[in-house]
Image (tube, rainbow, N blue to C red; front, top):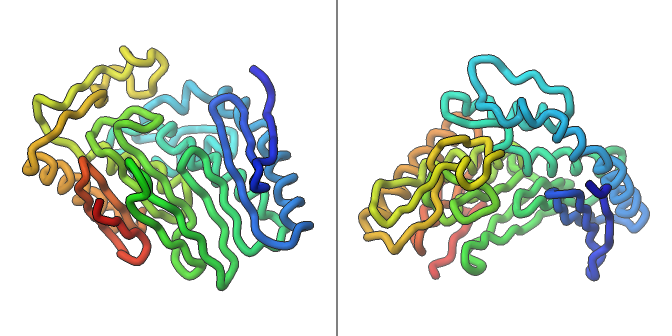
Length: 281
């Protein structure tokens, strides 16, 4: 395995890559503070992947009645994020992308004076905002379908998206579920849970066992979605309502701030509308 790599994109953003971890980072502030923040991000990035690989056997196990015993700070972030969902089938891997983003963001802002900053790990984003500043994040399914407005005064510092066509397997049929939460790890775990809940029983939904697609999958023999045909409107409504009900439950529990659910051109929005605005396609 080659080591971590850092490069500058043409627009000045920092790109960090190591194995499957691919981060795009941007900080706003004085040049000195931005450069120092980028140096701190890369210094922390050095051992992220080796530490996670060393704890993979535990990270791939479903969370049960006992809290997972993990050593590394990213692994512990993962376990904390999925622990509230332990009544469902979930492993710490459900929060890996968000947890990495949170860890790198924490490292880059430590001791720095920045107006704002974000770490984007394949669409799962951790961000920092000083008073008076904001960020806007696009919600993409097939195009720019919506927008999240992130402000300092709201209790949201993470955004994550999950769906059956994404990087990870899903038990549900959502094209995309975008979650806003207190940090990226919490958003990542909740996006997995809500996306799994967007589901229905229909002959145009094709599933296979996760292990048949990837022998190392943490989902084992569970059936994951591999194709979804054009569904009748009533099936779409049923599936979205199941996911929306789960999103409302997580919101009442204080685990998420808002959710945007998409399936075959139809949307459901739960939470503060000013945070997530879906545009009719």
